[in-house]
Image 1 (tube, rainbow, N blue to C red):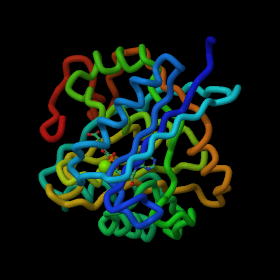
Image 2: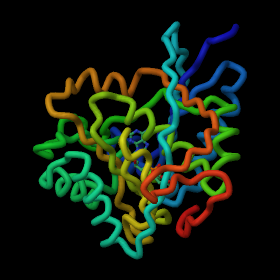
Image 3: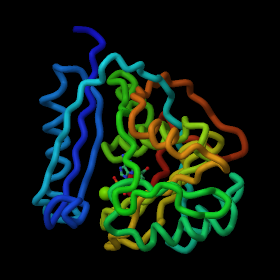
Length: 277
Ligand code: WAQ
Ligand code: MG
């Protein structure tokens, strides 16, 4: 049957299931049709095994049919990279970008501190963009953004245009960041990986796009995660419902956009990426 979609989600932990105190290792979320399910489940299983964070002993894959839910279509955020020399410079750059987006110094400080300390977090932490207070009450579970994926042709075209960036990690991060930025409750997102071998992170928002920053933590460090800075007065349950439940497809048509102001968006033929291409 045409247009029947399924959500496929995976979570994996070491030392038992997450709810039994196991340490989060890996997660993933994809969308597809019935004929894609074998492949999607196998890809997520492969992602959880041989992970740089550890050897998981709990892996759960959940497949759910999306009964007649309307699919929303969005474009990936434009991508650019800030090359920094070290972590201090990277975090300063992240703080500067967040402040230009209207996030208070207090919220920026709290957001950075949360990520520095976070080594077991499964989903994102939502904080108020002015007070810096945590708004979700999910503790280590956080809010897992689900039900988003690239439309197959869209990813094909994007990865052909941005060859140096076409990894599965960036594929996933850009899908997530684009869905998060598409909510009117999001002012900005700050992310770096909790994987000890990956130090590039990003700040994302509708106005600055997906702005990669080449060093946001030291190699070997297992801290990391995601902070969503919410607009003042955000309806937290509607926000979480959108992030977790609304199915979103990413579509992409190349435009050869060259941005103004010297902050070039990376595209055809541009490389210039030094860390974690
Ligand atoms: N929803 C909410 N939070 C998530 C999700 C999700 N679907 N996926 C991951 N997280 C949180 C969770 O706490 C993870 O432990 C943490 O983020 C890091 O996830 O070069 O690889 O998959 O442009 O380790 C960004 C830069 C890489 C990529 C981010 O994150 C680039 C990355 P990871
Ligand atoms: Mg990770």
